[in-house]
Length: 320
Length: 188
Image (cartoon, rainbow over the protein chains, first blue to last red):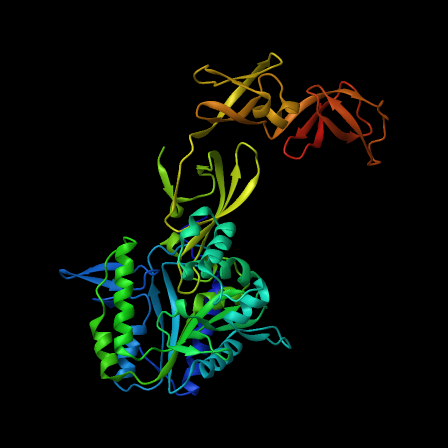
């Protein structure tokens, strides 16, 4: 491999330019404002499964942002109305055929919408920016996380004992999973057993288990179970996005941040200071909104039926 | 031996898994949604040659295996062991039948093989990709029948049986691909 050369063909680079232009066109027609928020900040996410890349800024520590979320929420709380950002995001340690430490993230927020309205817009966006062969329509499936589990694995993940989930996870992976948390066991089982069986086309999974809430609000499903109002977007069985009915309660947000910090310490991850400016914005009042982040590189991979992110970005990390 | 973390797993890296030396074939980084990252790893158990798939949490590590592939010259067999020599040091190693395995049927004295050493002793033997061997037994050749396709079994001097074209005869030398066991051509 000639490492000085780009991984993407010139044709793939043109496709990227076209897709980014049609995404901008999509939002411009719908009067969603593009915002250009900082990639470098003095604080970062506390999420235990995301590592930020740190930088030195003058004499103090900064972080490359893992998503534009916090800045965008500060804009929403300042009265921006509907906004989107399409820019780079950075995550340490994520290198693989579908991961690059620097990647292109499209994120947007719709004020006054719930996650199901946003799901419909996500489907519209993907259908309109992915170029499909003529007369081919993209299949669309919407299914709740629980129904998906029951359908493919025959049991309800909310009711299953932790012991049972650990046993299944250990059987699928290795012995070290037999002491994992409920959240991690479910993720593993979903990735290894459900994902490969998802329908082709666009598949939306909604109503995630309570333990997988991240920054989503809680809700109650039709069966009366407590769920998180979060959804994931899959395109041809590849995960391309994640969205929420956003948490707007500053106290709940603070307690989730604090819990993250304790978990980071327990698992010996680098300590992170809580973003107090985001909390101040929530206290001032984040309008009720739904938000979603989509990996643009993944859309390009799926469209090109490529198995390597290196083929859709100019220079992936292994060429930098 | 050093420990290797999942982010150092590369194709060809030799690690210990459940007490056996393994060679890593593939390592796929997976990160579900907001979840914990893990690595799906394909490995070949170097003792049994079986391929297995394991999923590790990212950051988990495995002990490196003291496994080395070394070019060695095959010397001779005394019936119980097969003897190989490192060309640089003249150091000799004896491999048992288990280690020699399928390579047995291709081994000619003085051929250079890859001997995989585990903790200093031969674990497996890989014959050269191509060998040239004499036919010691086959049906009489049909001279002139070079265009017809068709093939017949032939026993080679090392014991291997390969399919060869009909025109070949006992005493002819043939070139064989040891990875597929297929006839490649006649050697003049």
